[in-house]
Amino acid sequence: RKKFSRNAQTFYQPEMYTSMSNDLHTEMNLRKGIESNEFELYYQPKVNCEDGSIAGFEALIRWNHPKLGIRGPMEFIPIAESTGLIIPIGEWVITQALKQLALWDIGHRKQYTISINISSRHFLHNDFPKYLLSQMDYYKVSPSRLVIEITESVAMMEYETVKERIHYLNELGFSVSIDDFGTGFSAFVYLQHFPIKEIKIDRQFIQEIESDEKSLSITRTIINLAEQLSLRVVSEGVETIEQWEKLKMLGCHELQGFYFSKPLNIKKIEELY
Ligand code: C2E
Ligand code: CA
Ligand code: CA
Ligand code: CA
Image 1 (cartoon, rainbow, N blue to C red):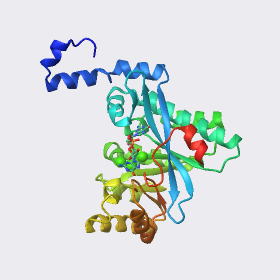
Image 2 (image 1 turned 135 degrees about the vertical axis):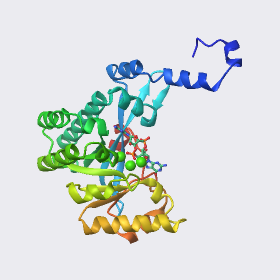
Image 3 (image 1 turned 120 degrees about the horizontal axis):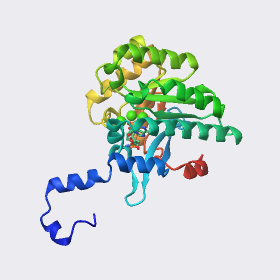
Image 4 (image 1 turned 90 degrees about the horizontal axis):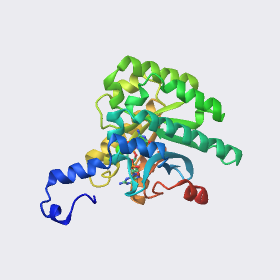
C-alpha cells in the first residue's frame, strides 16, 4: 500500500482497489503463506440436535496474514483453487486434522469426529486417496473419525471418477458428507448412486425457516429424505433457539451455528470442551 502516495489516492478508482487487494492474494503471496506456516484451523462444534451435546467439529481454515491479520477462506480459497495451490493447502488441512485427532486420542478425550472441507479439484486429484492413506497410517487414527465434506459441484465434473472415489473412501471407512445440500443441481444423483453418509442443509434455508414457508418445506423435505435413506442430516447456520426448536421438531440429527459457537482456535476449543 505504501507505494501509493497521498496524491495518488486522490485519483482513486475502483480498478485500483481491485488490483491492490488482489495483489495481496496473488499466487506468490499464497505460496509464501504456505511456506511460512501462516495457516491455522479453527474448529466449530457440531452438536446433537436432541440435547445440544457435542458430536464433533468442523475444521475451517484461516490465514494469519502478517500484515492483514486473520483472513477467512472466502478471500483466498478461490485463488488457491485456480492456481492449484489448493492441493498443498488441502494436504496441510488433512495432516492438521489427523494430528489433532491423534493428540486427542493420547489425552483420552471423547471420540469426536473432525470434518474437513475438500475442494473438488483436490478431491478429484490422483494423489488425494494416497495422501489421505499415508497420513492415516502415520497418525494411526481410525478413518471413522474423519468426515470429508465435498459440495455438489464435484459430481458435475467427472461423474465416474467421483463415483469410484466415494466408493473407495467408503470402503476404507471414511465418511463423505455433501455440504451446502440443496444449492447445487445434482443432489439426487448423489444420493442415488454414491455411498454418502451425511448431508448438510445449507444455511440459506435454515436462516428463513421461521419467516418463509418455502424454506421450511424444503428443510422438512430434506430431513425426511435423509431419514428414508438412513443418512445423517446436519443443519448449518443455526443462530437462534427458535431455529433449534423447529429443527428438533423436524427430526434433524445434528446442528452447527453461531447459536452454539463460532469457529474457535484450538486453544479455546480445548478450554471449552
Ligand atoms: P462451509 O463449509 O459451508 O462452512 C460454513 C461457514 O459458515 C463458515 O464460514 C462458518 O464460519 C460459517 N458459519 C457457521 N455458523 C454460522 C452461523 O450461525 N451464521 C453465519 N452467518 N455463518 C456461520 P468460513 O469459515 O468463512 O468458511 C467459508 C467457506 O470456506 C466454507 O463454507 C468452505 O466452503 C470454505 N472452507 C473453509 N475451510 C476450508 C478448507 O480448509 N478447505 C477448503 N477447500 N475450503 C474451506
Ligand atoms: Ca463445510
Ligand atoms: Ca456448508
Ligand atoms: Ca455454505
